[in-house]
Length: 376
Image (tube, rainbow, N blue to C red; front, top):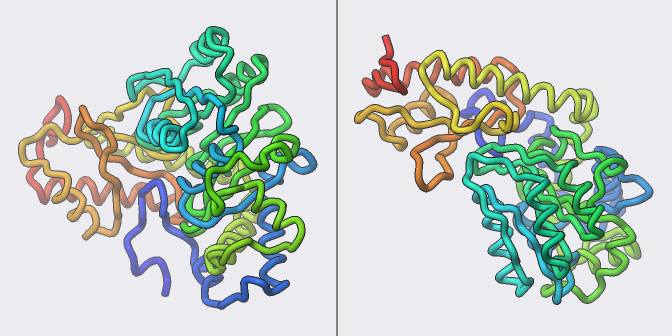
């Protein structure tokens, strides 16, 4: 069935996939079969290609949502006596901090308001002040708001201090540059159902090989032990435990389309054009973005909710959905917002269509006051 018969997902993942990607899930695979193992090997190679990590890093796939892989990365890369610094400017930074607490890793945070970018200078000062910190865990694109944190600058600071860096690149991998030749990191974590435009169900962690070789015994968990997964895959070409075979096959096809499109430059460029069209289109209706343009990632945009007593998000959501688009609720606690994703396989006509759907929804709800100015 074609995607045209379903609403377009303007969310941070799951997102709208292509007919080819969905069709890849129509075949059943034996998880020990050599043909399936070749798919896994190809994904691991192609993921490394995206970050120019061939020869220096390893890609270790893992079942589950992206958070599974974030937890696996922290539990595997950070020794049990390690100390993690988490620059915190949003919901997914807070999730990493919670993971550290649950895993019993010592935790320090640098806390920002959700509309501020993490500062490399703040990380520098924190590392200089506390030599017990062993690792920094950074969210590249904080999906709770859409803020883009300065990965390369922070990576260079962390490397200068001789500490390890774990990057949650869930909403940036494949669209925003992460180059292992220029940006030192111990681990970068991403997932199938984001900018690579696969379906959700698996994550992967790109780990520096020299780091991974030293991680035996760190993990709190058998299932989430990336070192054990890596060693087993190296010996057998297989996953240790039953993989999400259809998800893996879909990601393989999605990555093929990724490189056909033109790779990172083309994918990131398409999302940037979507973002620009979204912001300008909704601005014409009176909507204000939550973030300053200088720190806005072209992945997902947070908008202030209409300043009108007739506005209710659930009604707004359902009215937009009836017109063919699914939005995302806000992730902020102090300000009422909603979020609109810029990624997914819906072409560049999708965003103007979404803007039109929002305009029709405002009229249907009788909303005249979106921000300071009333709608005509």
